[in-house]
Structure formats: C-alpha cells, structure tokens
Image (cartoon, rainbow over all chains, first blue to last red; front, side):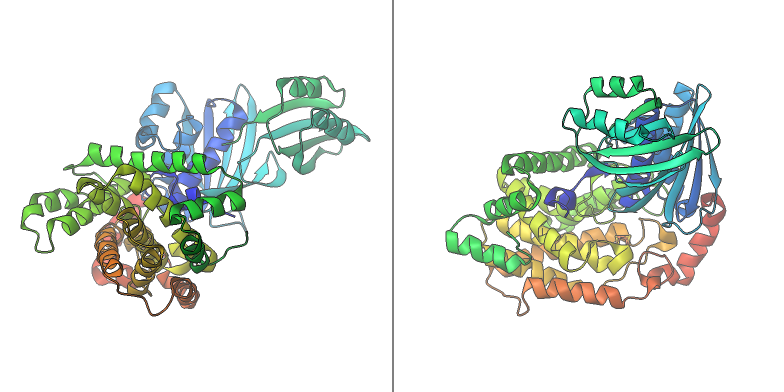
Length: 220
Length: 291
Ligand code: SF4
C-alpha cells in the first residue's frame, strides 16, 4: 500500500517518474552493489527506454545513478559532464531482453576486473523491480538491504548462511539462488533482509568455509 | 482501520470534530505505520522543495530536453497585471507552467502526483502563500491532498499510461482543489466536493504527449489544472455541491481509463500527438532522439 507521501511526492529530477526517476533508481542500486562508481559501465536499453533515452533524460539518469548523485539533485542534468570529470566511462546499447517490462535496462559494471550484471525494470511512479543480479533471478524493489553471496554449492551451505544472518535477529525477507557452475560447484545467493545487518554478520559470513564473497547492497 | 472511501474520512472528521488533516494522519498511521509527526515533517519538506525551486526559477526561461516549451512562464509573468482572469488565478497558472517547464528541463520537482502534473499543486499552494495563507495550513492542505490522491489510486490510478491524463492532471487538480479548500478553512464536505467537481470536469482527458515527451500538451495542462482547482475550491466553499460523491467519481474515472484505447494512454500515438504538426515535429526530432 502506498503512503500519502508517495502520492504527494517524492521530490525528484524531472521529467518522468518512470523514465527518469525509475531509471536512476535502478542505476543507484547498481552503484550500491558496486560500492562506488565503477570504471566503466554498459547500459543495455530495452523497449521504451530506447525512445526515452534523450527526451526523458533516461540516459542522464542512468549515468547519474552510477555516479552516486542523489535522485533529487539538480546535477543529474549534467551527469555526463560529471562522469567525464571523474573518469567514468559508459556506453549505451539497445537490446531486446525478451518478455520483460517495456522500461527495462541491463547494466553491466566493470571495476578492477570484476564485473556485475544487474537487470531492472521501472514499473511506474518511480518504483522499480530488480529482476536479476549476476544471473540470479530475483524480485527486489531496492527498498531493503540485500546481500549478494557467492558460495560453494554443497549440502548445508545455505543453512549455515541463513544461521549466521539470523543469529542477530535479522529477518530474511526473500531468498533467491542460482547455480553459477555445476562443474565448479558454485552458486550465487541473493538475500533480501528486513533490516540492516551489523558489520560483524558480514564478517562472520565471509569467514564461512562455504562462502567465497559477500557483497552488501544498501537500500536505494 | 480499513477505510477505502473519502466519505468515511469526511464522516469521521465531522462526527469527532477532529480536523480532516488529523483524521488523515491517523488513517495513514494505521495503514502504513508511519507516525503523524514524521508525515507532517516530510510533507513540510516537500512544500519547501516547491518553494525553493520556484524561488530559483521565477522569471526564468528553460532549455527543456526536447525544446518544445520553456519560455511560457516568463511570458505569463510579464502579462500578469493584464490578466483578465484575475491576478490570483493567473499567478497560479504561471507558477504551474514554471514548475512544469522546469520539470521538462530536468529540474527538481515534486511528483505530486506525477512528474507531468507536477506544476498544479505548487501553482495553487504557492499562490495561496503569496496571498497570505499560513504555511502550516498549506502543509495540512497537502496532507489532505495526499488522502485524495490515495483514494484515487485505490479506485482508479494516478498514471497516464494506465488511465490517461485524467489520472494525472485530473488527479493533481482534484488534490489541489481539496488542498485549497482545507488550507483556507473550508469544511471536510467542501473538500470532497471540490475534489469531485474538479475530477468530473477533467473526466475523459486523454494522455497524448507529442512524441511521448513530457512537454506538449503536458506543460500547459498544468496551467488549466491550477486554475480549475481554484475555481472549484471557490465553488465548493460557496456551497456548490457535487451531485455525484467524490468516491464514485474516482471509481468512474478508473472505468473510463480502462475503456481508453492504448493510443490515448501515453503512447504518443493518439490525440494531439496524432496531428500533422505533431508528426512533423517528431519526424524532425527522431534522428536526434533515438538510440
Ligand atoms: S498528457 Fe500524459 S504525460 Fe502529459 S501530463 Fe498528461 S498524463 Fe502526463
């Protein structure tokens, strides 16, 4: 249920909540995942985003998100200059992502030889759904903290991960997983949490034998 | 509390003698768990954004994304003293256009309820502020507007892509009319009447942006929304009632929206977007604007 504040707001950079704000929030999610502005990103625009790329500022909004600019900061309209200034390289390409919402973008980020792939749709009124992170299909609205864990795909791995998260009373809202490689026995797990987790939880997760990497994604 | 109609909120306010904005705040707290003080504070911030942005933008011209608009609010400001419609109404229209042009130029706006319709509410509220209505009354008006919008979103929609422009400019106008009545001391019933009368007058309005861009007709429709809101606020306060209650009008608007063909729902394919001039403009732009 939307709150009246969502009806009479939010404050944002125009012109369109679905083509500007929504796009920016997807990109902001990617920024939070990477933890900073990546060195390079490719934005694959699907459907209407290809048409709104200039006329609705979708392109600038996407650049702004990965530059870490707040969603109601007037500098969004100069995001291309800011990107140039901080040495953030980007590219736009059109793509057909198949049967997804018309306002969908796939963002591939590159930083220090690590790349991530986020697919998100802007579903109206600034609301978004992240539908895939590093090939793990999910359904996140970006309002809650999320953990992205790369773990060994062995019996008991998931239960030990869940145990660590729950120890401090953190609730798991949603959980998604995907076998990255059957051969290497690796899996990606996306965990949406009800509330922030303490740093110590993340450290304990990293110390688990079955866990390779842990990334903490702040809410947008 | 499972309140789904505006009439219930009005009834509670009348029975308990608690002001409508307070009733809305309680309803909201039970619905979303948000504390009233917090909502007041956030609402006040949204009003502050409208105030700050207008202050920055008054008398300015804008370089909009597509360039189909951007100098109109300046022209209107220069014409203000000659306005036949009266200074107050024309100020509201001028501020509404100013905000809408800023929106089209990637300025900071308050999506109340959407980007395309973001000029209507500041047009009305900032005009009331200019003629001396206390800020705190404007905040409570904005809270009441939130309830009007929320009921519309439950019974219909606030999105042009779903229900046409009646859902954007129409809803913004109903919200602004209710806000004006409440902020200037009208009764809860008058708030409901002003919202119903406004929404009825914009019933059926299609969403037909030229090229799909939020410039034509969006910007100038904000002017009509602001003036219509003031008109029905005055009519409601004069005692004029809407024969059809607001909740039913909202429901009807949703039904009309569902009957609208896709070409009239933000696709930029019907209505004024389908005129020879619009097509010529889009043709000229298309090379520049497609990825
Ligand atoms: S015409 Fe469409 S895009 Fe423009 S304000 Fe109306 S609903 Fe919004």
